[in-house]
Structure formats: C-alpha cells, structure tokens
Length: 281
Length: 269
Image (cartoon, rainbow over all chains, first blue to last red; front, top):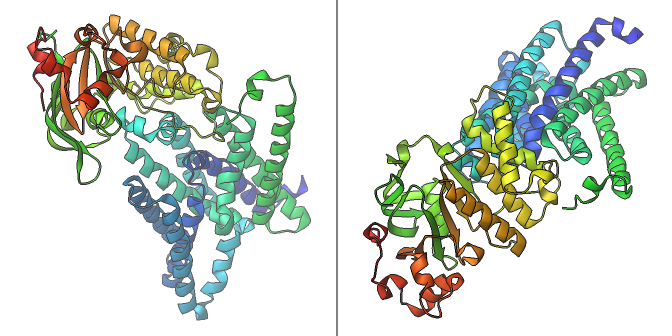
C-alpha cells in the first residue's frame, strides 16, 4: 500500500497498533470496576501537566506523565480507603485539570502554548517522531506485560475485593499498580486520539468484547484485537478521507460496538445456542 | 477436642467499622476439626465477628490469634477459605464460573506465574465437582441461580484447599435443593478434617451436622453450647435456636448446665 511508504505514516501506524493494544488491556479492568471514565479524568490532569511543560520548557510528555501518575495514585488511595466515591474523584480531576491547563496556557499566551494544547486535545498521530515510537514501545511493553501477566490477580481484586483481601491478596498494591498503568496509557494515547477521546479507547473495545463473550480473559484478548483494528483502520481511513485521525478512530470503534450489539441480539434470537440463550441478568 | 490445636482464638475482641464497635469483647476458641455455627438475629454481630477475623472489620480492642499467630502478624491467609454471603455479580460484565473459582488458587500461586499449572486446574475441577457446579464452568456467573452462585463461591474457597472454611450465611436466600447440597458438601468436608465456622440465623439442613453453636445477641457472645445437646431438649427445634434465645432471654447455656466441655464455655464475653 502506497501510504505506508511515508515515514510519518509508518510511525503513526506503529503508534496506533501499540495504543490500540494498551488501552483495552488496561480498560478491561477499569470497565470491570466501573471506572471507565477515570481515563478522561487522568487525561485532563495530564493536560495540565502538558501546560506546565510548555510553560517551563520541559518536555510536555514527561510533565504530563508525572501529573497523571501522581493523580492516579492519589485517586486510587482515596477511592480504596472508601472516603470518596470514584465518580466524585473523576469530576474533581476533570474540572481541576482542565481549569489548571486553561489558566497555565492563558498565562503563557504570548508563547502560543495555548495553540499547542490543541494538538493534545484532539491528538496528532501523524506528528509521531522516531523517539516517540521508541518511548511508546517501552510503555507498551510495560503495560502489556503487567496487565496480561497479572490478569488473574487484577481480575480477582476487581471481581470481589472483599474476598480478595480476605484471601490475603495485595488489593491496595494491585489497585495502585493499575492506576499507574492507566496513567501511562492515558499519556501515550493522548498523542493518538487526544485527551478528549481517551476514554473511548479504554472503554469501547472492552464493552464491545463483553457483548460477544461471557469469559473475562477471552473478552480481554478480543478487546485488544478490536482496539488494534479500530486504531489502524481509523488511521488509514483518516488518510483517505482527510479527516482528523482521533475522531475517525473513535467513530470506527462506536460503529464496531453497534455491529456487535446487532450480532449479540441476533444470536439471542437463534435457538441454536442454548448456553447463551439462558444468559439473562 | 480441646487437646487439638486452636485454629482461632479470640480474647476480649471488639470489632467494628467506624468508631463504634459492633461486636463487644468476644472470647472464644475454635479448635481443629470443629463444626461451629455462629447464630444470632439480624444485627447481632455474627457476620461482623467473622469479618473481624478476616480483617474486613477493624479489631478495636482485645486480641485475635489465627493458627496461634497474632492476626496482625499472620500471613498464611490461604489456610482460611472465606465464602461471602453473595457474589458481586453484574449482569453486563463477563466472568465465567470457572474464572471465579480459579481465583481461589491465587493465594497459593507465585505472583510472577501468569498461567495455571496442572495442579491448579485439578484443584479447580475437584472443587467444582465437589459442589456440583462442574457442568456450569463456562457459564456466566450472572446467569446462574442464587444457589448455584453460592456453590461457585464455595468452590472458589475450596480450590485454595483451606484448612478452615468461614461461611457467611451460606443458606440465606438459597432454594432447598441447593441448601441440601451445601449441607452435604460441608458435612463431607468436615468428615475429611476441615474445620468449619459458619454464620447463620437458622440451621435448616445443617442441624444434624453442626457440633457447637456460639450464639450472639446485641454484639455479645450470649451462649456457647454443643448443638447435639440442645437438640434433645423437649419442643426444641434447632432451626429456631437463635429466635428462642433472643425471645425468651433464657440462654441454653444457663438451662443446660450438664456435660458441656469446659473448653467450649471458656469464652463467655
């Protein structure tokens, strides 16, 4: 295919594959805990981190990473101690983060930091550099190794945290680990789909997979496959249609969800699959 | 019985969630091989007592020893199998019965091993066969009946091959058929040497298997008696044991001063 002869498209394609795999891997455990919006909250905090980077001249990716990881750990500790609900904490991050980013960018108007923030809001995958690709590869390696390697443990603490604690599993430690992995994924995904649509990559492939199978592990692998497919498909589509890549990826994911809903409802109506026909809530 | 090793020892233990304790100064010792029921009305603190042992409720005063180790220093939690009152199922989330039961192996697996060994698989299959849910392995937990879900949770605890089973209201809201299966499974496990501690507000099909009843009222241990003895009392029905005690203010321990082993009575709160 001719479009892959461009270096920027090769970089973009690699980035899309990696984010397409990472986001649903982490998202599987977030959806399980009903925290699929936490990615958006962390994305907004990361934006404030980006603004700090632009203001001080530090690397925006690094400051965003620090901001997101710190926020993720604080939120997980507050949530697991049971004092504040997950939704209230997400609201705090969403509005605190965007407000901080707006104030920081406003103060830095003359340096056109405000304009640069736009590329983080909606993503700019085609500006991925070789250095970015290597950084993404490192983060992807860490995220996939830990989510797949510790899948059974992360599943257990999300499925029944009370039992998991009674069984002596490190519930709080694993929760903090998941929060940090979410922060890493969010910062990487920010470049691809933009922080306004990060939640889509974390949640939509996972909820699509949940329509298709009743087994968690299988759903997780399926979600990773779907995530990679929509990211690459959306990227290629955006090239030919000359549309924004992040939004195209998200629309493709929504389309896939709609198809899966259709498939699941058709399968329920067919009398051929007794094990699934009984799966009422 | 008193000569065997104590599995759990509570001395003047108070448990609670916020500031105020729910269980006050409970003292009791449970030995290896016993089949004990914690009886009491709603809000009597019987579930909190079990949760306190498992660190779900906070130990506010007194001491708890698990396998002769202070609770704070105890690390071998895989030796205890906990069966919560109900599964945390949400219809839209996938989790097969097999996946839930396989969680029971985690406390025995090293964290760095991502897959199940053949020993793990064998233990999971055995646990599911014992509780009669092997044929449901691939089904979504949410699609199972209340009784089937309870048996899956029991299988999860059994998969870890615990020495002690702690069950929170295993019979509540379960159809009679499942109650009888559960009672049979517990009796079999007990015969094989597992210590069983369960919370209940009535005995039902368990009446013939339970050896000892610890009766709670308003957060205090009110009586600690062998069940076989109370069963012989005239007009006494075991499944109304708790109701009887709470309504008549006449604990069986006081009325039956006969052959109760002193070890069983050692823990009057």
